[in-house]
Length: 395
Image 1 (tube, rainbow, N blue to C red):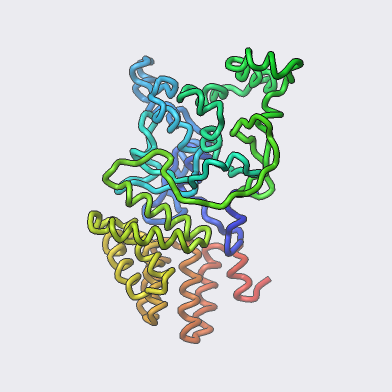
Image 2: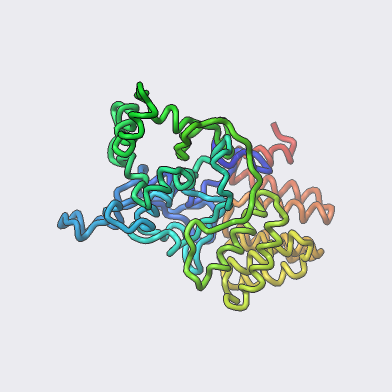
């Protein structure tokens, strides 16, 4: 049922819960640097979405309530206003953090591209698709004629009150529609329906959400099933600063190529990154992207060099050490790969892929007892792992 599982190549109940997941499903979180899904006390600062997610830091406002010391999204410029909602309601096809930033650095009042860039497929005809993505409300709304003709006046807050759920949803949203459509509706709807949303914003299956359906925010005039259209080029939702525009686009192409097994996008990302590297020679994301592209193109020796540079820059990152070990395995340097993976496990004992890779290393050397020890080591950390129990032939 959870979004993302339909593309999981190794389904199990050990899927990591990353800080980016929790940012939209909880309040403040406290991740351990360099790990994938480990957190430090108090772990989660607030179970629900707190005021600061939309209004920015609230301490000064609580001491002396004033319009001057709090962010009101409705008073922001359109890009910053919409960014407040887009931080959780626009996943796009790839998100790329700007150099030295993390997605979690975003603060209300900024535009998201000041912190990270979101990339979507450029397909102006995609209104006819018969299915939608789970986290694409903003993308759908932009495709609606209503939004396009509003000249940035129509936004999420036009129809949604984030502080209250309407008691009578049909009449509430109908009133929102009638605030713009009174005259046209009198001609086209002699007997207007009391459920505008039911006709023009139906629920549709989500392509990335298991057996789920979500409200279609494209506000189509005559909703009807359509056909899936081919993916095209990636474009920025809003362009990031010029200094790393090409860098972010390249990383987006690599991310999409890797997650959807689209080699043509990996190739595009590779060529863009090569031009970018000269300007950002010590950027871990750029070096990692180049290394991943080399692995996909069976250039493992080059990948080793890129990943070694990344590990020197970020020695506390377990994931980077797994990348290096993968490349080392491919060039036959099994002892070095073993050391890198053991170091990764010491940094992050929850990183299942590190155990899998280590078992592969021992498999290449024919050491069956060492393979068993790896999976038993992982079972001590996560006894419920189906993959480890299967490998050990345990019930």
